[in-house]
Amino acid sequence: MKILKSIVALAILTLISLSFPACEKTGAENCEQQDMNEILNCGTEKNVEVCCEVDAACVYKYNGIEYPDTNTGLNELADALGCTYKSSADYDEQKQLIISHLIALKERACVGAY
Image (cartoon, rainbow, N blue to C red; front, side, top):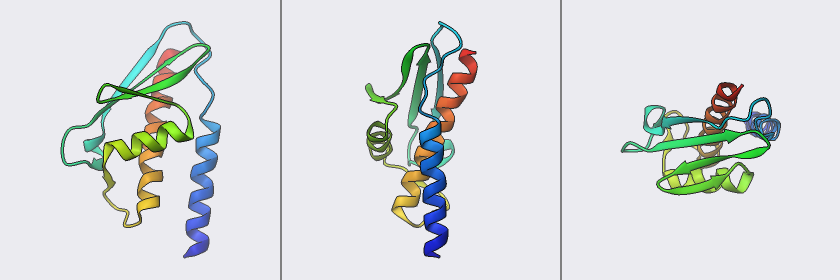
C-alpha cells in the first residue's frame, strides 16, 4: 500500500512539473472556468478561473484572489477551496487530486489559446 501511494505521489508530482510551462503559441489571453463542486465535495458552488497568456505564467483566480501557477500557489488554492475529493479518504491524496484537476483546467485554457 505504501508503494502504491509513493507511485501515485510520484506520478502526480511528475504531472505537475511537466505542466508548468506557460502557453506559448498565441498572443491572446485565454481563460477557462470550472465549478469545482461538479467534481469535488465543496458543499457550495466554487468557481475557479485560470487565465493563460503567451510569455506569461498562467494565473488561477478564486474568490477575488489570484494564485500563481506554482506549487505554492496550487497548494494555497487547494486549501482555500476547502473541498474534498469524493472517493479519497487520505487528505494528501485529496489535495493532490484537487491540484491535478486544477492543472487539467489550466491545460484546457492553454489549448484554447492555441
